[in-house]
Image 1 (tube, rainbow, N blue to C red):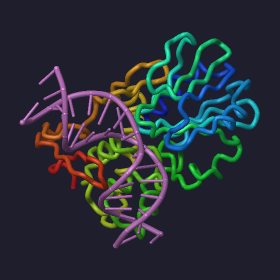
Image 2: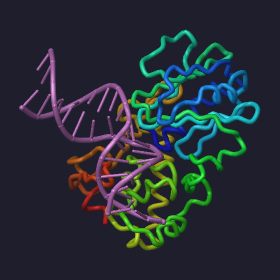
Image 3: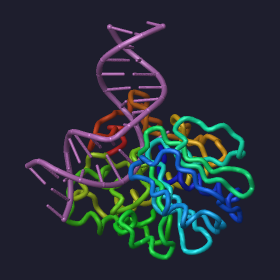
Image 4: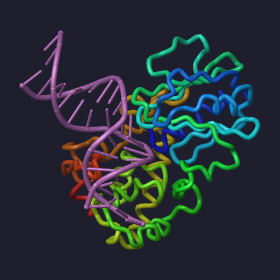
Length: 274
DNA sequence: CGTAGACCCTGCGCGC
DNA sequence: TGCGCGCAGGGTCTAC
């Protein structure tokens, strides 16, 4: 479900509700997520502590607690993190609940259980295996076509898979990889070894533009994405390629094609993308 | 080393 | 209506 824009939208929507509140109790109803939830570790770092800051790194939401702990949440494909009144009924797939001093609760629902909840020492996140090998943040200074070109040197394979490699650049998932390449006019199957500097610049610029617009429009809700207050996004209306197989290209009118790369659907225009 | 494919899990929509 | 199939926004592991 969620790529960088969705997690950023989530972060911004949760921030005003959570900052300054306190996690009184951590309830793990089902610990079998992508990695087993370490309930005691989570409680030790979070219970009784105030929420200080909300950050995002890649597709991870980082909840910095008073003391030295950070609660790390990854939504996988189907995760939803929502603030609710404390008395709201428990729903199916509600695996973790953070009970807040204000009486509300922060709930993680995740039907497919590809999500992740960790508790880590705040100052040592980058040393953790989940973060140690992550590439550049596309919306931070330091991201550029030159960075992409350098990372591509000596590598092979299609540019679409390259863009989705979190060791290169983080946060670009299956939707935004297709959208970025459509906007840049680059064919998703093009080998990274056959892309010149000017095209890398266009790809980087397109990624930034697409991600920013998606954030501004509240993320993409194809099925079930919702922010921390349960609101849907509307960037799906702005999608140019993703999910539009057979529909006319918005630029040239030719039908959008779908191919499968590394097991994932890719959408592109054969006329506009070279 | 890098890349392709299988796999993890549940739910939904589609065609029959 | 019911059933089987394919597909789904994530990441990781194995085999080559």
